[in-house]
Length: 105
Image (cartoon, rainbow, N blue to C red; front, side):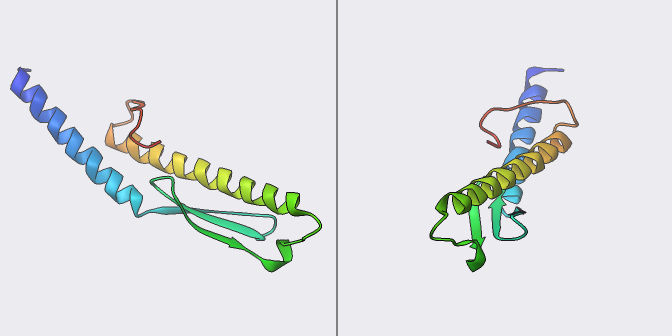
């Protein structure tokens, strides 16, 4: 394989990676905790796009409970988003197990 061919394949891979990042930015995952009391939606760019808190979860005498629910929901949604992006990356790389820092968080 000559250098021109290697460069062409690298550029093609970079283009595919950019397309995949754009696609994943539009995809979301949802996490709901506390029996649906707190629901978080995260996109493929690891941004929280929605947070819903049911009024029953708001207890002025126990703010720590609500804080724990929010943290739990956000962490779970982030984990799901990471799994989604890693799965898509594995498809793109043919399952080579490449972990490209900065590509998907």
